Image 1 (tube, one colour):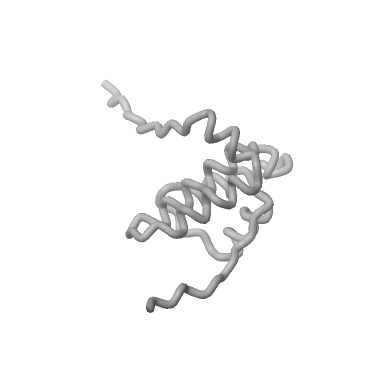
Image 2: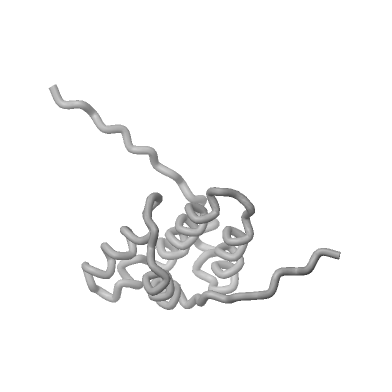
Length: 107
């Protein structure tokens, strides 16, 4: 007898996916995940990038390359630890970039 595998699905609101097609909304969404002050910030970032990638169409981002499509899924998976080069490549495909800002000084 074979054991059934349970898969945990995470549903992203269709309205959000539609809004993430807008580069400004996508950038704000990803930025908010980066500003999260928790130990899960990395996972939130990867999930946000996956949401944006799905909104834009991963197949479109990979430009027909099966290898690149697989790389996007693998790099943005829950347990992934993508390199800076990989993140920059994915961000560029999404029309986004990394930004560094000074921290606000406490008074």
